[in-house]
Length: 208
Image 1 (cartoon, rainbow, N blue to C red):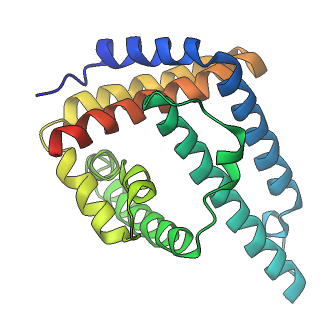
Image 2 (cartoon, rainbow, N blue to C red; image 1 turned 60 degrees about the horizontal axis):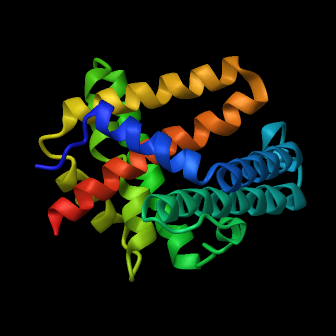
Image 3 (tube, rainbow, N blue to C red; image 1 turned 180 degrees about the vertical axis):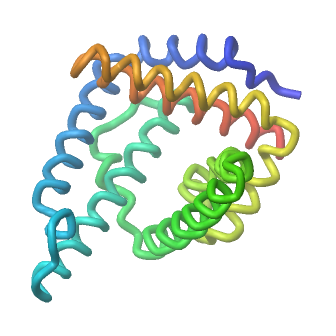
């Protein structure tokens, strides 16, 4: 069984971050700035009063998804030993990918919410088991959110404790970054996502 312990994953994530320091900080900074701009112009954050507001809100939502998918993809490239590139942020525009990303996100959101309502632990358990669906979706030749969800479920079998601990550390890294303000965030976000992407890559190879 491959090692996805916190000590192993964090050490590798830190090394990858240092090796790609300038590229990752640049990509993270651009991603956060663009997300902030989209949030600022999205009318749904206040009140949708017209058809134009509705259309603009939908466009903002899609743009945000494209950037998020691109950010995750750039982290996967880093984990796989490739140079993370800014253009990756904008490359994941395929309509089927976006549609299945939306469907999968809704299913996970509903499942985790219901799980949290019923004693919290089921919600955490579902979040852990389904957390890799975005990575799986990004690597599918033909987008299928249900298959991505089932693949995430299968690859996390028997790794709940390690993944929970890893998720907790990832959360604490981001909190530490927030406390350290801008520079800290620009380091904390890529490091935390690299940790989870490393766990995904190790488990995906194990399944082959």
